[in-house]
Length: 225
Image (cartoon, rainbow, N blue to C red; front, side):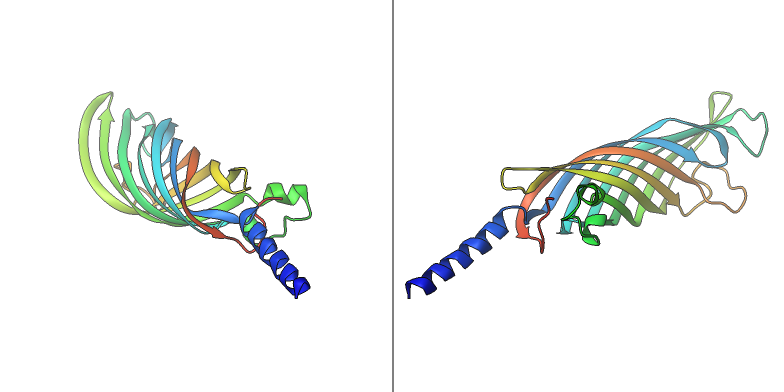
């Protein structure tokens, strides 16, 4: 009888240890990010623009993430490529609301036997859909010549790497995110000029922090190496 009780106790402690050390993660996160924007439009010379983002993430697993994001920023460029020597420029201040699904390599690879694989597990790809609200201004020789506001559907596609920082229970509590994002706008008039068959877009280099909010649950394998 004592042996049976001891065996059951060991099993319970083993399950508890598994649930606590290295397997637990938070299902909800809040994030803040900043980005540098570059336009890809009918204007030949993109200028540096900036963006700020706030996000809420639901972690289906530590490596499958669903992200709702609010973003504000600006895109600008000089020299209209279809009119050589043109003095036209544009700026577009925008707000976006978007949803992305994100897959990290840790979901589909075994990183438990290799330090190099453990490094690769945090690489991710992400894609989704959103709406971009725009405030477009066209300038001619430095003077405002037109302004319009509107909205369009856009497709955000992102590739990046997520550094995870763990607490004393080996639970990821904070993440440092580096990414490159391409925002494909379903319009050729984002810069105020409709020319050719290619739609406008802009790219972003993004850095951000995410903070665990709670909703603790366990993963099927240890999140740490």
